[in-house]
Image (cartoon, rainbow, N blue to C red):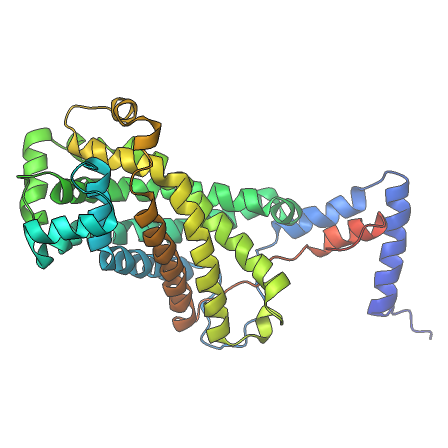
Length: 363
């Protein structure tokens, strides 16, 4: 009895020939059916060799991503409180604090070295909560939007997917951050305001009610959503480009240390762009929480275009370092807890077949 089995190579060649004929006749049905089936399958990650690896897109995976966000944002933002304090003071009172070095000098003269740590408690709590939602929800939205788009569109429009997922995550993250951000800014910039969270929080609640904690939410969204969109999309694309054009070997062949070094470099590059796109809104937030009864539009008009760029230099230094460290810590948490880290994106097989049938170079 003859063996009717077809070799994998023969099947591939036969499939591509059929695909080419179908495309020439304008018939994409078979390829589209294949792509549709593929898009409804669970998002795949390279087979894990680590027996302890957490299942991708499981509840445990998302929970640990949230923990990574808590550590990466809470630790880094708290570590740079002195620089953040000076930056906020330059923004709200540039006549008194004339630049970074002068800002440190005046602050230390008035409050002592310990005064540079003002606002550390609301910073740690607020940005830990923000980090949990920012990174945890980003992973969730990225997977969900991938399934909505399907494998082909998710690859072709991956930058838009990163932007949409990060914007969605940051929307909720800022709601968690806003109360602590309001307390922090007032502690750091308002003379006579209590210098601790334990006294500052009740004061705002008693004088302004819950709305006092959220008066800066809209400008916070204006600052943080563009920042986060740039942070995630720029990071993802930079990592992809670094492995494609700079790193001399595939990521799978890089050691964990080499991979984390690439993460840090990509994070810093993303951070510089983040600081620039979000700085005007950051200045408005700082000034708004200091000026009672003012709206974001009122503050922006009073500051003027040039005034909204005060403090940009320290913020570039701060955000560049901050973003690089955040991605480094987040990736290190993934490595430590055996979370799967998908390789740089690659076109799905259905798209490669379409390109081949059309005579295009497979990307």
